[in-house]
Length: 367
Length: 157
Image 1 (spheres, rainbow over the protein chains, first blue to last red):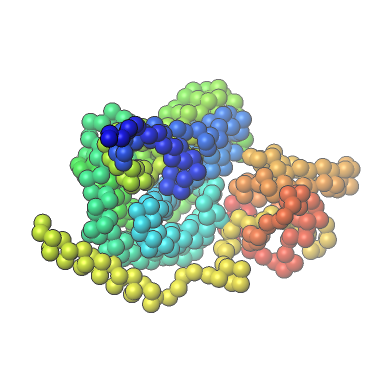
Image 2 (cartoon, one colour):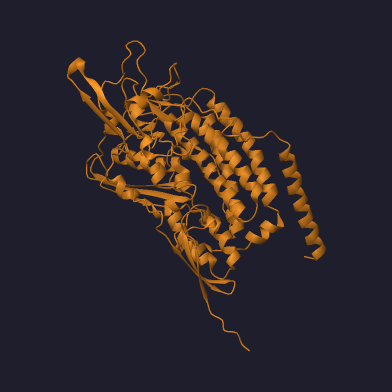
């Protein structure tokens, strides 16, 4: 007797621990095989773009911190401050620009650590999760000593940074970097050659170079597919043009390649922070910008390399105290486009591995 | 790859990982028994807000300039005052701590260091009304002895 078979529609999320936030995936299954995936977003929509229209340019720094990607507050502040500074023609002192580069890169490491830990625990490697958060905690302590905040800093100001580095911080940061590199090796010992990890990730969720470009993927997702594009190299902002670093690029386009790219990026970030600490110039940290500044009429688009990819801010000003319109090009949102292409044809168990590997944060997707 | 080689590799990888985990187990612990032991926060920590009283005059340091109320991105500070000139006194200084985003703009713009951060972070209550801090609460929150006051007016402690 022939059994009747049919395709099954499965709702994964929005309350699912492995979707890393409130994402709903509508998965069409044929047995265990994934036929189609439709991501359904909007559960964490906070309307940050609209809210920015009702706050002054200075107040908005506190909003981009938590309204966008909450794990990379400093990178968000960087993109926003850069946009306003370009619009209003504010010159940032050299020391502030170096400090910003240091903090951008430390935040990149912290973000990649959260990604590595949560992805590893998705794949069953609990130890790596605990180790990653141990090191991240040290970065947050370094942040706290300077900015007063652990996740939401409000440290960057239009035309500089709020306060100078406290005494001894540069040495503490240097010591952390030395320590951190040995710990990255430990994560690699647990994961890189582990046969279980390899079976879950190698060759899984591939996306070709052409597809990655067509879908608008950026950041580590695109670089794992062979797209050698990094805003820090392509359009250097702050003092990235004075730094010496490589952009890790792999061509496999699978989960394993995305893992290797991010690990290599952490090591490159350590290199950048070291150079910035070494060449940190003395002097002013903040240009004189009034707390009630007005930007001249006009518009500007600025993009930066956030840990998740190409983070762009389009700012329109009508000459008032508040922005007329802000559009945020969120890297997580663009990377989510590529998800359907990656998941088709894989098993239901791989959905978790592939979703984790693109490193999305839902507050960045929905904004 | 023959099965024997694969099995040998798997066992090696497993043993390497377990050996490392065992070594890490013998290292110094980094965790803190939280409610019993507390974590030290830095002297720039954005904790709760407080209004210290001037020890010389016994009055508020606040000169009622409304700068903090104006800069607050979440509009959680509410100030009212009575009188004119030197007689002017604060009648209301409320901070809705449930709205506060701890950005520190109020501390930054204050010309007299009248509003400061204190390194306390345990503010949870069972009732949301208790998160509305009035003048008395803010005075009480201010420590008696001189403290590290966070980053004040762009100066660094």
